Structure formats: structure tokens, C-alpha cells
Image (cartoon, rainbow over all chains, first blue to last red; front, side, top):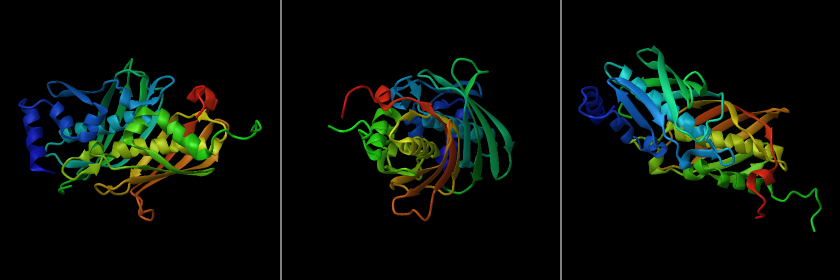
Length: 150
Length: 159
């Protein structure tokens, strides 16, 4: 991964840069409008409601793809920060179950690293809107942890 | 005057109207190119704002996911034609076989290989334009059938 990203992660950990900077460097994360709220090193991921993320105009409901993209990006950043010596995670697979309609409101994501190996990481992600124990979607993903440039 | 059994729109028209009604998909720039009973094809142009890795310009996996999720919905729409249904995704698994090339449009193909009363089973493939033999992502998904008429969904205006 690039030296610039390594430097940025180190600066976030020291509190010299907001964690939001990790979102700002990823065009797609900005396209979705993802926010990171940090309390110390505890991060919450937020997808503020936005017209551009609507999928069903009649309900209205968020596009499942926007919710999934948000969850994948949350997992990427979460995993990046879990590693002592960060390697760039690349998504191998992403699997999602939609449990409820994602209504037109703010969405939150919580990540849990199930397994962090040398080469592969497994992350579980839950997205919710009104209550943490009523997720709108649950997902799991495998990431290849790469030293290479790309 | 057309008889009541003549559908008002072709499969391709229904799919295109569907996309037009979905704001996120219009933001992704999705365009439907072919719609047959068992197969739908759409294209998503490369856009700088959909990039996941700023160092390489490679599209974000989430953008490919959102694209194929939409293609899956289209695959149901073209299968149940001439009726129209809202079909939320139940589950979706996407495998990223390789990274899409920078600057290249992504083509998505959705095939509804089984349709039951309540569930549609869809197979999905994505590749770069002209590279159909070298897919970059494959997916499997199920969608729930919620029967609603096209008129209720699209409104009463006639195109």
C-alpha cells in the first residue's frame, strides 16, 4: 500500500488527522456520503440519508446496493485500523442478507473482525437504523491482505 | 386501438423506465442495453467518483455490487414481463474475481434461472466491455416478489 496511506493511518491514530480523512481519500465513499464518528479509537460509521442513495421512490427506501457499499467500505476501514502493520485489504467476496427495508433515514454500521490471518481477514458487518438490535442488513466479507502496490 | 392483451411497453422499455425511477442507479449511470425473458444486460460507465482505490483508479467493489444488485432486479422485471413487480433483494453473494481496469465500462448480465411464486433466483456476471470471456465478478442472489402493477409504481402518466 502507498506510503501516503500509511502516513495517514499513523496520523489518525495519533489524533493529528480526523478518521474522516480515510473516507475523504476514497471517491466512492464520498459519493455515498459516509461519515466516521470517532470516540478515541472507537469508530462509528454513518451513512446519512441522501436522495442520491434512494432505490425505491415509493416507500421511499435506500438502494440495497448503497447500503452494501457503505457496509463494505466500513469493513475496509475497520480492518485497515485493526492491523498493527496495515496492509491494503482487497475484497474477495461480499455476502449480504437484507432483513428489513432500509428506510430513508440515517444508517449505521458496526463491524467485527472474526478472523485476521496473515493473508485473509474475515469481517462481519451489521447495519441498523432505529435500533442496534434490529439490523436492516447483515453481511460478511473476506479480504485479501496485500503488501503490493495496488 | 390496441387490445388489452398487448403490453404497453417492451421488455427493454420496462427495464429502462425501472432504472429511470431509481435515483441511485441513475447516479451510477446504469443503462440497460438488452432485455430478453431469461437474460438482461446493462452497462455502467467508469466514473471517477466511483473509484475505490485512489492510487490505481479501480472502481470500488461496492459500486460493482450496487450495479449488479440493480441488474438482478432487472432480471426479475424482464422475467415477469408484462407484469411488473417490486422485488427487494433477500440475499446476495458477490465474488470479485479480479479488479476492473481503470477507465473501462462494466457490463452486467443477470439471468433469472428459477422463478417461484414468491422468490426469484438470479445468477450475475460482470465484465469489462468486450471481455465477456474474462469476468471480473460473479454473483448469486435471491429477490422477493411483491406484486404491484407497473401503473401503481410508475404513476398514471403514459410515455
